[in-house]
Image 1 (tube, rainbow, N blue to C red):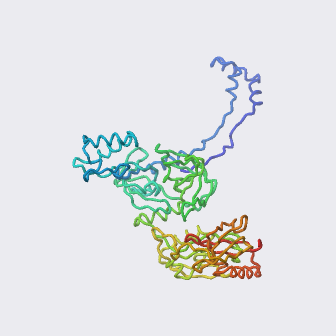
Image 2: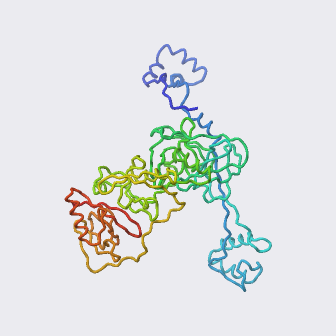
Image 3: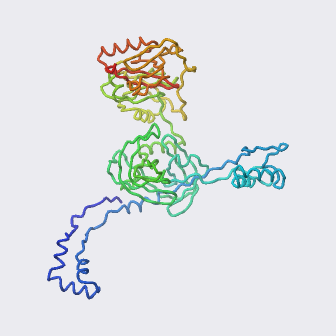
Amino acid sequence: MSQSPQTNESTKTRTPGKMIKGFLGTTAIAGVAAAMLATGLPAPVTGAFADAVRVEAPQAPSFADVVQAVSPAVVSVRVQAEVKPVSNDGPFNFNFNGRSFDDLPDDHPMKRFFDEFSRGFGGESDRDDRRAERDRRGPDGKRRPGRVRPVSQGSGFFISEDGMLVTNNHVVENGSAFTVIMDDGTELDAKLVGRDSRTDLAVLKVEEAREFTYVDFADDSKVRVGDWVVAVGNPFGLGGSVTAGIVSARGRDIGAGPYDDFIQVDAAVNRGNSGGPTFNLNGEVIGINTAIFSPSGGNVGIAFAIPASTARAVIRDLIDDGTVERGWLGVQIQPVTADIAESLGLAEAQGALVTEPQSDAPAAKAGIEAGDVVTAVDGEAVEGPRELAKKIAGIEPGKTTEITVWRNGESQTIEVELGTLPTETAALTTDDQDEPSAPQAEATLDDFGLTVVPAENGRGLLITSVAADSAAEERGLRAGDVIVAVNNQDVSDASDVVGIIDSAASDGRKAALFQVENENRSRFVALPIDQG
C-alpha cells in the first residue's frame, strides 16, 4: 500500500540546442512535410511539438493508494449542545404584580409600551429575541427545555471494527449529542465513551451495529524528521479532504499542557481537521491533529499532532472505564538553568527543580524538599520538568517509585509511593496571611541590586526595590517578592544572605540560588556572585 517518490533513471531530456538541430536536419524533412499535411501547422511549429521533452516514468509519485485505503476509516464529527433558555434578567427586569415582562399578554398596553420603548436600547434585535423567547414557551406559558444546536465540527477516525473512534477532547467537550458522518455521507449517531482534557483526546462509539473500516497506530519512535505524511480530515466543514507534507520536527512543547510532546508537520491542517489522523505511507496513524500555529487562523504550514504512543495509552484507559488514571508526585517544579546548575554544583543543566512540595502529597510525605533537583525516576534520567511529568503520569498510582534527587551537593534516592493525580489539581497555597508591611529598617544587598527588609511574619526578606539593569532585575525579581532561602538555607536578615554568599564564594561557586515567593507561588532564581 505504501509508495514513495521515485527517481526514474530512464528520464530523457533535450537541450534547446539539440531541439533546434533535430528540427533543421535534412533527414527530418519527410516527417515535417507529413506533419504539415496532417495538421495544417507551419513546419517549424510542428517540428517543435515532435521534438518536445518527454518524461518516461513507469509510475508518477502518488499518495493515492494510501488515501484510497484509509479514507473509509476517517469521519467528520458534528457536535451539538443544548442551548440554555434565555434569562428574563436584562436591562429592563420589570415586574407587574408578580408577573415578569415576558409573562404579559401580547395585547397588554404595558407590553406594547415597553416593547416600543426598548427599541432605543437595542432596536428590532432585542424585540426579536423576546419573541423567540416567547416561542420557546409552551401553551401553558412554561418554558420548554433548551434547544439543541451545533456547537462544533471536527474530524475523527475508527480504531476498531465495532465503531470505536478517536477525536479531540476540545471537539466534543461541550457536546450533548454526537453525529459521525462517513466518507460516503452516511450519518450515524454516536455516544461519548470518555475524554481526557490533559492530552486533548476523546473516544466516541457509534451506536449502530455494523462493521467499520478502521486503522491502526504506528510505532512513532521510528518516525523521522523529513518523512512523508498524509493528513485526512474535515477542514472548514468541507468533508473529506487530503493534504500531504513531511514531518517538520518532533518533541514540540507548545505550552498546551504538562504532557506536550507534539509531532510537527507541514501538511495543510485547518479548522475542522482537529481530531483527524496523520498517516505514514503505510497507512498507519503516527499522530492525531490537535493544534496549528497561525497568525491568521488558517494554514501556514505549522501543525501539531499528538504522537501515537501517547494516544494509544490514553485511549486504552478511556475505553476501559472512561477515565485516565495517572501517577501523582505532588510537587511544583521548574527547569534547571545553567545559572541554577552552577549555584547547586550540578555538572549539567538538567533535571527538574522542586520549588514546593504540595502539602500532604506523596513527595512531601516521602521527604522531598524545596530545592531538590529530581534527576532520575526509577533509574531513568530526567532531562527537565516535562520529562518528569510524563514519567510520573505513566506510572500506575500506588506503585513505589525511586526518585533520585540532587541535594546539598550530592545525589540520593528517595522511595515514594505515588498517588493518583486529582482530576483538577488545586493551586498550591501557603498559610493565609496579609501582604506583609515593611518595617522601617532597610538593608541593601549591593551585589545583587536589592533593597530588603525582614518580612512582617518573620519568614524571609521582603524586597522593597530592585536596581535598574541589575542581575536581579534581569532575572525577574520585583518589589514585593519575598526571599525565603538562599542556597536552601532559610534567611530572616540581610546578614544571613551575606554570610551564605561569602561561604558559596569561598567554595568557588559563581552563583547563588534564591528561593522567592510571591502571590502564594514559589520559584528559584540563580543570581551570579561575581557581579557584585
